[in-house]
Image 1: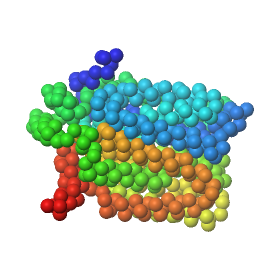
Image 2: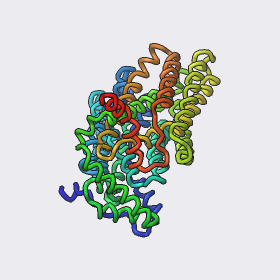
Image 3: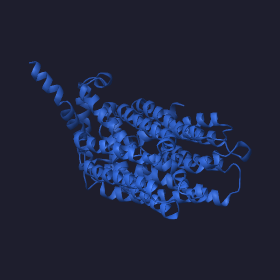
Image 4: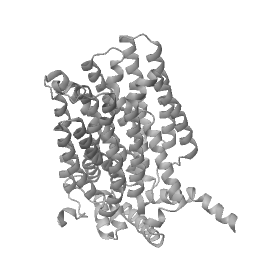
Length: 484
């Protein structure tokens, strides 16, 4: 057990890989958790129509209320997982945390696939959510600390690429199974496949190094340097990065302990900004589309199989958009990309509401509605989602990075759960006016981004921490000066 827990500092990836390939290998392993995250959140859109069938026909007899519970139970579990994992990852390290989460992925996947009733399904989706949430807070941190300043944004963005790839995989699996299989328990097969990326994540954690930032914070400087020598192009890069980490570690040791740091006003303000970004991300309504697109399209007259097949378009657009986002995220500021994304999201939500309210039901309405959803998703996945995960990896101070990232991501999952749970009843009560409500919320999100969010592009994690301390500590300094 001790050997299993030990967070070894040795680089175990294949020796013949070049330095960039080693980085990509580490990212590939880490993002197996993101692939599982994407599959688990995406597969529910294909499984829900079959789970809604009566038990005599192989389903669970779900109604709109229990549909919301099944969809959102994973999200509530993710909120718990992200929060708790924040403490674990700071104590045991990023890699060992991912190893434990991989086991929960496998357990949760098997549990949902064999659930005999709605109650057990909700419980096992909650357990699976713990792994999803833990991975969502740990993977971006691990990649950011492995990558270095110049590669951080595009490599962390691969986290989002694997999430949407997992969702695309889920949509394809759902569509293929709905056409090929004539089985009352088709949804069980859909859910069972989620254990594959979890198992790959478990195996992969034995072939990647520990985070050098975490090692330095733990006083294991030589091990951190040995890792960086295998992940950086030049000895000058290694020296500069190690020196910056050591200086930062010295400064933080002289500063307040973690518990005291968490009480400082600048840290609290920074956590508020990070948590507010969860509102920006989730109240776009993105997961209402990802989870419930088949249900939305069925209201326009599409059949169940056609509506499920149409969600493949969601996955394809999301993957293409994320690839585009990876290419541009290093060239443009975080605030600029968020602004562009939110403007298009608002426009598409208003347009979708108009289409569903005023265009007669039929093929034209179905195609127009799907077009609005796809344009929405393209700009969402290119400009907003990747930026969110990059910000979560870089905003918070090293000494409490895991805790604060876990707290902020946990709040994001709570926002996600609210949207997932509330969307079916809201759509039933407010009808197509629901999309205008989301548009209004996103106008407020845009104002928040323009007035509160700092720019972090192209800066080392240590520089970002120093600037955040200065920016969000200004009010404290002003108050102290006034008191004098």
